[in-house]
Image (cartoon, rainbow, N blue to C red; front, side, top):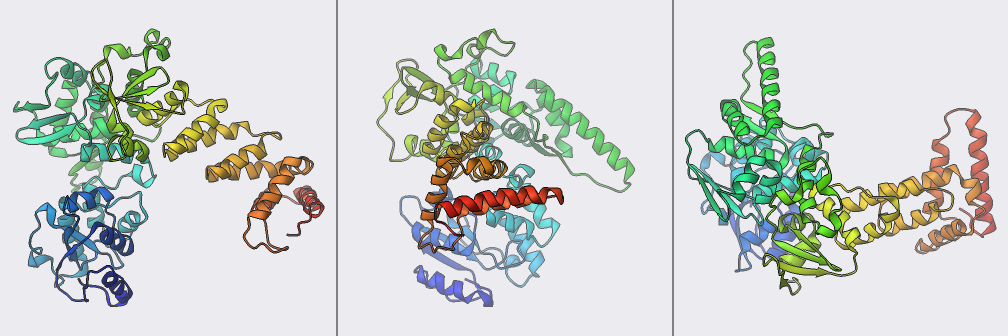
Length: 536
C-alpha cells in the first residue's frame, strides 16, 4: 500500500488493524475482516457503504481488496479500495500506475473505479470533499456521469438520494426488463404510479411476469435506462444521439411532461449551439426545479392505495385518480389497531433503518399471512392509524399535511422509526404554536429530540418576550435545569439557554433607538439570574 510520506501516522493505524502493510509503491492485495475494514474505511476517509462491505465479505467474513495508492481526484491523499469480488483479480493495467502524472492518473483511476463499484456520495463529508477537491473538470464530469453527484444531492435532498439508490440497487424489485439482452431491475409500484402506460401493461399483458423481454427494434437500451431514471428521480441524462429514442418512449408511455421538457431542452440547446459556433453538445440533462412536485404527487398515489378503506374518506370523489383503479402491487401489510395498510418494502426499508431491521434483518419479528392476498402481515404497537397515516405519506412522498395539534405524537413516532426528515417536519409544525404560554414547553421538546432549528426559533422568540418570561416559573425552572446540566459548573460559567437569548437580543439591534430596548431586556434577564442565585 502506497502512502504519502506525510501520512505515516495512518500507516501505523493500518498496521494496528492487523493488515501489516509497510509503505511502498506497489499494489497490495489485502484480506481482512469487515470490522477492521470499516475501521480502516473511517480512518482513511473512503465513502463505501455498509452494504458494500457485506456484499464483499459474503459468508466468509473477510473481504479481499486491492488498496490503490493513487488519489482519486483529490488534492490531498485519498485511498480507494478495489473490490476483488467485482472481478478485479489482478492489479490494474500498468498505464494506471504511479508513472503517470497526478492529474492524468487521477482521471484514469476515477474512470476505472466508478464502473467497478466506487462511489462518490455527495451527501457525506468525504463525498463532498472528493467532488469539490477534484483536480480538474474532467474528474468532476466522470463522477457526475455515474449519477452519484447531482444538484439535489448537493442540497442534501435525502429523498432524492433514496430514489436514486432504489433505481441503482433495485432493492426489493419485483420485475426485470430485458431490453436487447440488457437487464433493468424495477418496481411495479413506481412504474405504475408514474406512467399510465406501465400501470395498464403491468396489470394486463405483463401481469404476473417477473421478467419482461422487450425485443422491439425501436426500443433502445440506453434510452430505456434514461426513461427509468426519469420515472424514479424526475431527472434525465442522455446523449444527444439518443434523444429521439427517448421522445419515442415518452410518447409510448404517455409521459407528456417528459416529452415537453425534452422538446424545450432541445430548443434551448439548438439556440445555444447557434450562438456559439464550434460548440459541441454531447449530453442533454433535464433536472426539474426544486418547486416541481410532480414526482412527489405521483408517488403519493401509492400512499392513497395503501390506506385501508375506512380511512380513505372521499378520496374517490375528488378530481384525482381513484386508488381502486390502480394496482400498486403491495408486498407487506402493516396492522395498526384494526386497520391494515398494504405497503411496499422498498420504500419502508429504504427510508427507515427501523423498518429495515424489522423486515429484512435477523431482528425481524414473527409475521403471519394477511388473509387477503397472502401478504406477510406485521403488527405495529404504540401507534394509532391516524398517526401512522402521516408516516405513510412521508415514506412515499417525503411530505405530509401535519396539523400542529398532531405534531407531538408524530414526532415521538418519527423518533422511534428513525425518520429525521419527518422529525424536521414536526419541528416546522410545532414552530407555529409558539406563544408566551407554550414556548418553554416547545423548547424542551426541541432539546429532547435534538431539533436544533426549532430550539433556535424558541430562543429567538424568548428574546422578544423576555420581559414577560422572567415572571414565569416554568422559564426560571428551565434556566436552573440548564445551569445544572453543565458538568462541574462554576458560579461564573455561562448557561447555554441564557447565552442564546442574549445573542438574539443583541442581534435585533440595528439602530441607536433599539439599544435602550435591548438593554432593558438584558437587565430583566440579569435580574432573574440574580434572584435565583446565578451569576453568569
